[in-house]
Image (cartoon, rainbow, N blue to C red; front, side, top):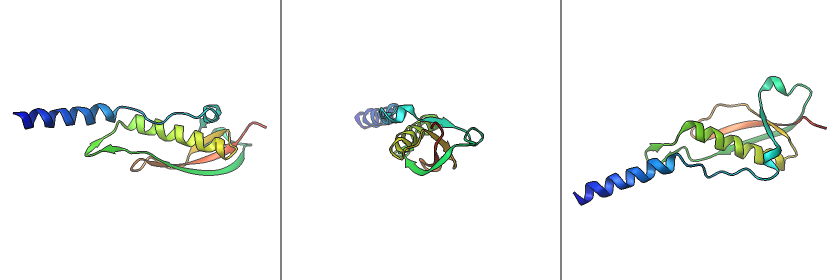
Length: 107
């Protein structure tokens, strides 16, 4: 019985932690927008950024919307460091990894 309760407790903690978001926007990253490819006509290409987060906690998969949100936040933070003000996802999320194009749109 003790082992069952311990196992259930661990599963519960992993499930709760799976819904948490640990990635925070930097001050400069907060000013970077996420756009679509059609919204960056006339913008200057500032490079690409490859970002990744944990998409699983043990065998439990994290909420995919949270994973995607964290990836976008990391891309925005990275874009700010590259001098960009806009990011566009250029790959799908695969195993907690995604690539974004970085643009400078406002001059």
